[in-house]
Length: 186
Image (spheres, one colour):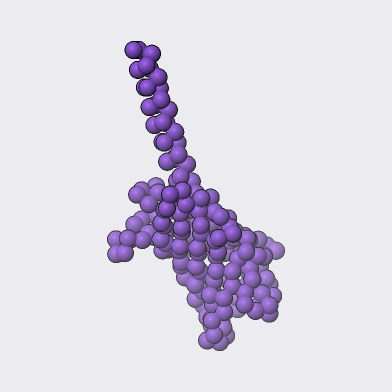
């Protein structure tokens, strides 16, 4: 009888331990780049232009039940930027704009994540570094978990002049740039 009880107890402990380990691992999400995107929208002479970063990575440790314990680190490779205009792409790689020769990456690091009580979504407060300059931003995002996958959908607006990006005028190109992030996570 002791032997049967020991096997039953051992089996229960093994199942419990495996379940706990699985739940802990589910908080460290990996990006599926094929089904993910980081896009930006800017305005040139009143017309909207779109671009995207083709190379990016993210480290997301997040549990929607405990957002305050979450961490987000996102990195984009600046030279992977492609807009809807080849001419604009050339400008963006110049020293006055993204300056990838001196600043090859842009990154966002969260400092605090909270649940937005107004709509049930989340807000990540953190710092965005672009062209060698860091500025605080707020990123609103949805986080939906379905079995072993999650969908992250976030957005934020930056003022490019705060990062020293582009010419110091808004007559030709607007200061505001919208960034949209959609990530499929495993």
